[in-house]
Length: 489
Figure 1 (cartoon, rainbow, N blue to C red):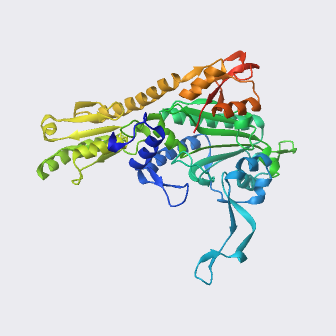
Figure 2 (figure 1 turned 90 degrees about the vertical axis):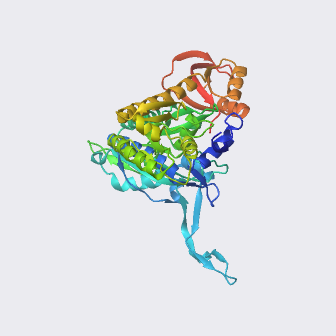
Figure 3 (figure 1 turned 60 degrees about the vertical axis):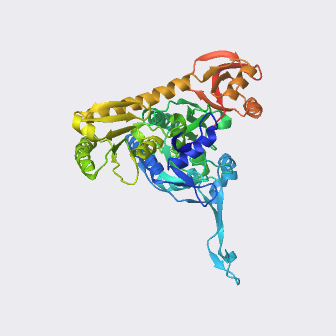
């Protein structure tokens, strides 16, 4: 075990928690339920952010920033929205502290806010109150805005990256003149998330619609990407919401169409958060530590010199500098670890734990032979390679590792989707882990009863779904297609 990590078989939850801390990704903070994202963990988020931001801009979106605080009255304007978030809201009631006679710091009761403020759990309400000032006519539409921000949801049971009281995310909020255009946007963005998950995170996902019960509070339709973690639990990894005219009606946001007729604006919102780092860890990593897809690894190549004297290190460093220059010219991130405070074995274990995709070791004998030893993190295999053309070799290897990590996760996911026709079969799959592909009668009552009996939730109604007449696994009532259930994070 890399630095004594609990094995996945022994205790998956403990394995995850230990790995996040020991790989230097994050740690719990002094604030209950909130985390400190450490530089290595934040570097992964920055790579995710950079790629997603590029994809958003390529699809016509611009970044803006809206306030952290939302007037409480805004929430009451959209009933289902407030119902969905009421239990998780942090509320600001005062704006000043003071010191009492004993020197104790207390809230100054004379500094009570006229209207209490909600620390944003999501920004639909503050953004739609703003859009009212931006939109008068069809010429002002569409508005395609995204914001990178932090949000607060007062979670009771927290876990680093997966569920914390404060987390980082992006939230897109768009405004359109027709329902068709808004639905097209909702679909476009779930496809962007799917492409990012599969091509950058090397994580296969299933795209689909949420049931009415699982929809975002205030949405008419929610599209989702669902991934399967190695313990057989599902993880919702991105959502895109068609909000209809609900928020426009709540904030009286109307536009004049080409004929001068007034109508309410159509809306979407969509987001992914730092829980994607949790997904990345759980989808690919092993008992030795992280396994990072090269496209998101902060360090793609670590080079470790093997030497006994300063003279040997000096000669190795000259050779290494040539390799570094070649790799950097190809846009590959490299770390040369010539610390004299740690032995090579310690460094190897550290880079294994941190999931660095490729490790290169060079010693005096390698210099004589113009070679080096290359280790792959995904397969834990080693190979001796010539230093000539090493840049092309490493570039191809990184692509191969990216593909291999995806294929491994894809095979695992596909082997863990089980068609079930009876409730006993359903319970067995849920107990064992994986997606249960089952018929459901389409009612909230049945969905909630299944959740009560098995703790499984309806993850999605897949887009790519063959129509198939069948009977609901719980009630025996007719069903026209299978849906996916699983226990989830």
